[in-house]
Each structure stands twice: as C-alpha cells, then as structure tokens.
Image (cartoon, rainbow over all chains, first blue to last red; front, side, top):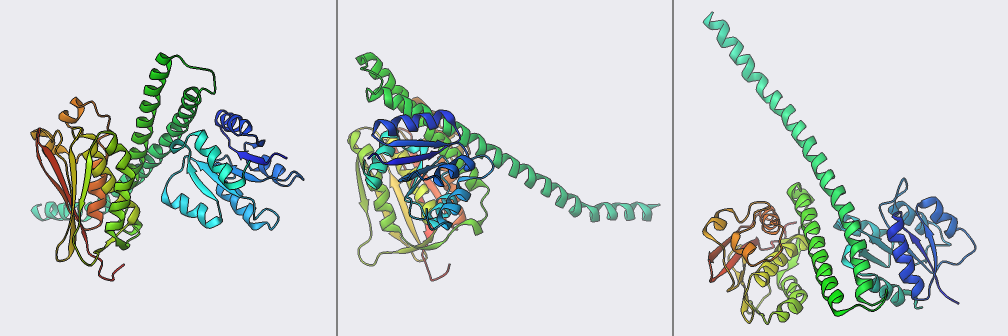
Amino acid sequence: MAKTILIVEDDNFLQGLEATKLKKEGYEILTASNSVEAFKHIESPTKIDLILLDLLLPEVDGFMILEKIRDNKNYVTIPVIVFSNLSEEKDIKRATKLGISEFMVKSNFTLDELAKKVKDLIGV
Amino acid sequence: MILKKRKSSFKAKKKEPENLKEENKKLKKLNAVKTDLVSISAHQIRTSLSALKWIIKMFLDGDLGKLTPEQDTLLRKAFQGNERAINIVSELLLANKTENLEEKAYDFVKLDIIDTIESCIFDFTGEARSQDIEIIFLKPNGKEPFVRADKEKIRVVFQNLLENAIKYSNQHSKIFIILKENKDEVEISVKDSGIGISAEGQKRIFEKFYRDLTAQKKEVVGSGIGLFTSKQIVEKHSGKIWFESKEGEGTTFFFTIPIYKGNK
C-alpha cells in the first residue's frame, strides 16, 4: 500500500508542483492550505505517514500546527519535514525544538532532492 | 533683554535631548518597518524563484518531454541565472538582518575555528575544482585555538571571503588560507591571485551594494552585500577586517576574532 503524505502549503501553485512530484514517486497525496484543512486530514481515519509543512500560513502558522501535532499523543510520531522559505536560525531552532525530521529551505532544494529526503524517511 | 535671550537659548538647549530622543524613536520605528518590508519582499521573491527553479529542473530532467540540445543549453543557463538570483536574495536577507542586530543577538560560544574553516573549505571544494583552483590551508602546529564567536555568523564571513576568492581568481591558480595565532586573537587570511580590486574600489569595497568595476568586467554576478555583511559581523565580534590588493595581481583579505578566554 502506498504511503500517504499530507502537504500543508498555502501557495496553490507550489502545492501543485510538490504534489505532482511526490505522486509521481508513488505516494498518496493529501493537501491542505491552512490549519483547519490540515487538522481535518490529520484527525481523519486515514493514516498519514509524513507531513510536509510550510511555516508561513494564514491565521495559524506552521509552528502552531507543529506544536499541536506534537502535543497530541496520537500524532506525536508522525515525521514532519518543514519545507519553507524561512531560513533564519531562530526559525530552524524553534522548529527543531518542537520536533521535526528535517528543515528544508524551498529555494535551496529541487523537488528531486525533496523526494529523496521523503524516501529516506519513510521509504516508498 | 540679554538675560532673557540667554534664558531662552538655555531652554532650547535643554529641549534638544528630548527632541533627539523622539527623532531616534521615529528612526528606529522606520528602520523596523524597512527591515520587515525587505524581509517580506525577499520571502515572496524566494517563493517565486523556488517555483521557477523546480519547473526548469523538471524540464531539464525530461519530466515534460525530451529537450533539443539548444533548449537544454538555454534552460541550463536559466537555471544558473535563477540560482544566482536566489543567492542574491539570501545575501540581501542576511544583510538586512545583520545590519540591525545588536551584539546581544549574537550567540557567542567557544568555537573550534579550524574545524569551522575546514568544513567551509569542504563545501567549496567542488566549485574550486571545477575551475582547477587549489585551496591550501596553512594552520599553526600544536594546540588548536578556540575563539569566541557566533558559529553561524563567522561561517558566513569565511564563506563570503572564500567564495569571492574563487569567483575572482583565474583558472588553474591557488588560494591560500592562513591562520595565525596572535596574543589575544586569531588572524585569518584568504589570499588569491585573481583580478584584484581597483584603486577606487579599495576605498569603497565595504560599502553596501558597491561592486568594483574589475569584478563587473569579469561578468561575475554579485550583490555587493557580502563584504558589507562580513564587516558588520567581524566588528560585532570585536575583530577587524581589512585587505591588501593590487589590480591584476590578486587580493588578500584578513580578519581577526578574539581568542576564547572562558567568557561568554
């Protein structure tokens, strides 16, 4: 059975590109543009194997989503890759402290490199 | 009458510090707005550049069909141009941040400077090799010097200097990195035998956005921010940064950082 990835990204264009690439690699993709949509997926019965999380989101940002995920024992073990264009040390430290598998700055990586990182973390 | 005049001028003088305080407050506010504006704009630009990067890469990888050799060449150039734009935005963000940082925002730790330099050299090995440039690191024998530095920021300084040395060197040349331990500080120098800095450039090289004519002639893309940022960072470490250069013969940049003495 294919692994499921939840992409939380408010930029529809980027979200589409990320989804296309990861689908092509054989993953099931769920998408969310904000925290409400994200938690609808997270709290649904579908098992999520990895979350790809942007940080700058409308209203509730990625840090708050991450905090909420890590505070809930049901989701605490879901691997999270932060995929953002924030790159300041304080952002990396803050996300790392909350518990992430990887912090990737979008503009520094290609989608191939992202797919490779996902594969390293959860396989195909 | 004279007495009255004196009195009023005294009053005016007394008022001055208050006015200055107010002005200073306003300027600080304006500066914060500018910092935020640069940061938000840079973030938006980065997002667009990321999308462009991913799409060009998909074309180059043949995900969207086979390319003709001409299309492939042009898209590779577009990819490189986009990468340079991403670098410039990153430098701009860093300068924007560094310029406004108080010393207390630096995380000074006991740092193994040799380890930091070696890891930076490793990062640039590929780029240097592609131009047949050899990087030679000369360090003192014996006990490794520890410095008092913010690791990430001092890394930025060294990266800027090494990247410039590679960019402005001629092919098949050597870059020497020399680390010397003085009484209270270490002195690090990066010496290339490249294009050098013009006489005019030598006066202005640390100015924000300044790019020397010799560098522009070599058609190397740059933002004119790297050295400005490096100077800010070194000075926040209570160090010094300077250079020696001769047009057409090469440049050596030097900087110092205090030795760690158990003080945070």
